[in-house]
Image (cartoon, rainbow, N blue to C red; front, side, top):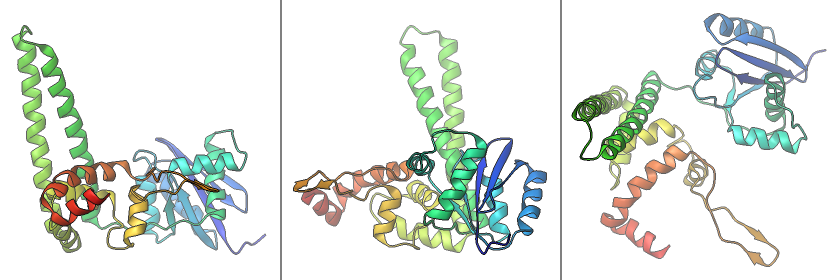
Length: 281
């Protein structure tokens, strides 16, 4: 049977990924390596009318698959895992296996509107990796500082020296990452322009600008309301009948929201416009 539109769900793990093609109800599994991805692309070349492929974030295991699909100019969407699970429950699908998850992703692609990913520039990919490393190092620095603080005055001098040595190395490497982020911005005109606009605002420096550009590539492509929803800072109505509930924020991209919170603290102190809005709210 020939279909005019096909929707493909891809459930990705560390070593392999399962796919489901709807409405064909065809399932298959491929290894998550160069050979397996190449076989998957060859499989897709045999299909007509591919309208959308949907994946969910898996901590980075999906990157090679997504990058290859975008390079092949295929329509790929990445959907929040929580939305996929809520969709599955709403459809009465409580069981969970790799094959079932692939079907749920394909069904989501068929029934729900999604936004296709835009290909990232080489500099954007590098910046994302650098920001990820910056966050890792910052987390380890906090851990080492906590360990040093908990040693106390009577701690063994050797143990203290080891922690201080590790802490010094982590701080040096983090600074190297910051320098690499700055060089990455300067190597790409589009990223450099975005960073310049962001850093023109009080409270946003180089590091915060990099965090926002890496975590929110949609900047400049969507309006302010859509961006606010993506980040998770848009107030959500909670009304029923005559009851008017308190507006609250929820969901969104927590790392981006965290970066904005840190930027907002000095902004409401030193930017008169921001301060006026903060005091009014």
